[in-house]
Length: 505
Image (cartoon, rainbow, N blue to C red; front, side, top):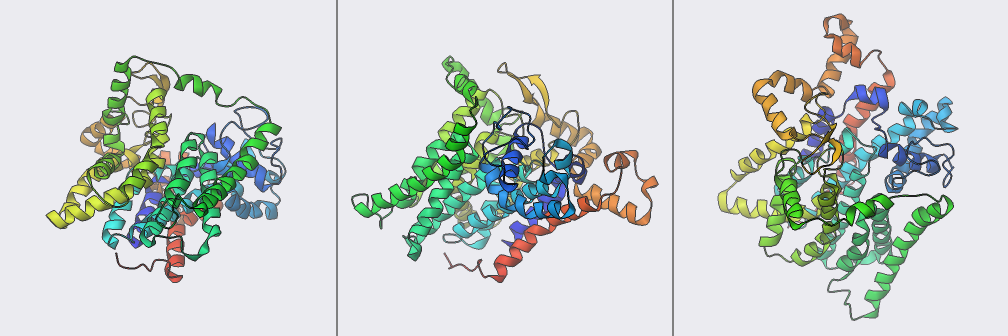
């Protein structure tokens, strides 16, 4: 877990851009406004009213799901205490201006960092019941840290996908632990309560995960101890579903009733369209191999993990296949959407499917090492170069490494970049210096800027530095270093508490 923690820090150092934190608080428009509005309404005691919240999509109630805001709310509350103590007007009404650099908004950013580390920890800890440390670590690094998930933490943290990723990781951990020990030990209904809350939140985070709400309890409780022919099995199932239903009713059904609105009705029209068979074949081929966001470039270990899941025989295979079934809904969405989702990669599926494939990937790593030796790690590293370069180059400039409104090959006029993967390698070959700047204008540029401030040599730096950092803000430096240091703090806490101690597999 130490190596994973260090690599999370490096992801933060490269992907986090303090000058964007200074300008916007790392909040994009649209979806992000809704997620923070949900959280701030809870934290400042307005929920289910949104009269004092800032959001631009819909008038009386944010369009997007409440789940991310609900999960981030404890951290937003903690950091809002600074706003309260300083007398900030964000306490009384949220606007675009007063929230952008508020500590309350930073609480959401901090929460995303927390959930990333905790999800990686749970996946690692779950894998350690079956694999050696190096196999577990490598599986988490390749499947999680190299395939775009860190972008949703350090570049666009006020979003839904890291929360979706965490909840799936939590349930996978419970599955791995329960299957190894063949029980939920002595905590009984407390574990069932946690499962019920988690699957309720999965729906609240992203509504397309509705099928997973019904599948997960059956998978987790359907082991040898809980025989489906016995009444105790169905009591636990009913209890778990009841908890999840109460979570959904409390934070979805009732607020929707109190704030009537039109939601995603247009989405159903989009998803129910019928096309010729050739469309589906071309679309699936494009999702896999397209030079914009093809999974073979942005998330190759998902494809490798799927192959391992289907070809290997192992005790957890049937359960993982059942858990994989709800992902068909997410995959169908990206087929019918005709584009990647207006940001990086095929975000509608990667965050939910990655936790399900860490075990098959770890199994492949273990078996390939037995057959070929540790030198096989070089192959994994070479494969990882492509998604890493894709991830670190994203939004590297305002021309060919970012998104723009354009038509794609399926007739959709959306935010995209039809040749993104090609543009990266063209820059690597013909303009390597520009690509270096694009990748390292996060933490490295900020360290250079801070050094220039200390030594009073700002005049010696390129004008672009002063443009990005027109004034020095102490709070931005504090927030930045909090995010840099936080993974190490979490690692120290679990190490001190001996939560990393595991039985040898």
